[in-house]
Length: 169
Image 1 (cartoon, rainbow, N blue to C red):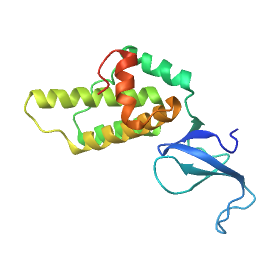
Image 2 (image 1 turned 90 degrees about the vertical axis):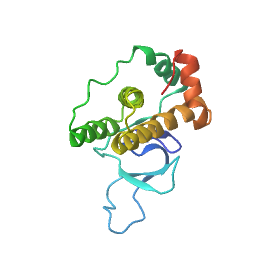
Image 3 (image 1 turned 120 degrees about the vertical axis):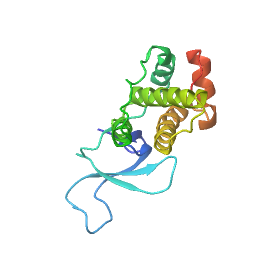
């Protein structure tokens, strides 16, 4: 499906580069299976993913797909109201991160941004769980968009605001 040199999005790890395809140099792993050896782009490490893995893997967005996604930001609905129970909220957030879907990440970012603004308006603090998942969703989405668009991650919010015509969050 993928070839050496491709950039893919692997589960909730984010963008990775396919380094090799074939058996892996780890004795404890099934040497008769084919694995993708992946290098995460934004952190160190090596991932050995079975070529027939059930973990969602997809090609990274192309430049045109990234621009289309950014331009669709105003049309992407925010996530529905989040449950009040912190454990259920965390489960919702985790589900969004694991879906490996850019639109779901955008919804999560928008929903938490709105929740943060409401908390600030009411003079309340902002939850650690919300903050942690908000940052992770931005890391995943902005990392992919940056690579797709050929820009530094730090410029992604500005690019979203410019192309979508609204504040990115």
